[in-house]
Image (tube, rainbow, N blue to C red; front, side, top):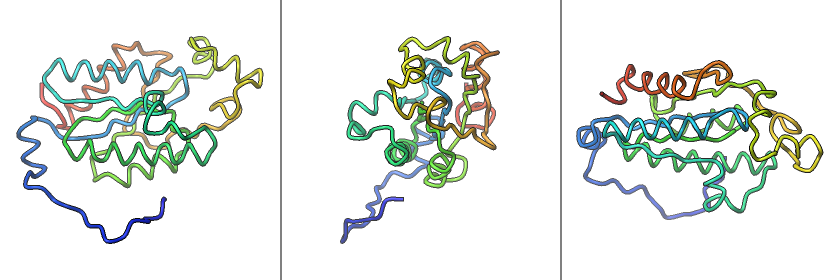
Length: 203
């Protein structure tokens, strides 16, 4: 983890409590961490989850891998060290969003198990839900609209997860969604139903 460099700082507490935010928004803040190979369906499913929640008057927001690299993490590449720092920063942002009682949906390959576990440790018990968006690599390649897998196999894209860089599957995710057998609607419904069953939202 990154060493704390700043000194003479302290955490400032406001007057609004977590319970105040729960009553106001009628939901419990949580980070839904979608992880899986490129092309597995993470971003597509994240968009549908957000839409379903907002339609039902719940506050939700997506942190998407590509979008974050346009701003907050635009100085990071795809080396193992940069991938770890990418996920560390996202974890800190997700923690803030979750503390604000927003249902935060992340869509990142996040290939390293330790990085995902470190984000889980940042959050309180019950505030991190790991969802493995499972999909065979050959199916992901068939869906590859950007042509990244083809470029990776040709050696044009370096350190590409699943081809020239590893992906460590979750060992005990809260949910596994196999998008090679489930539709986008079925996948979305399964995740939203989980949120309802666990008391994060009410419909």
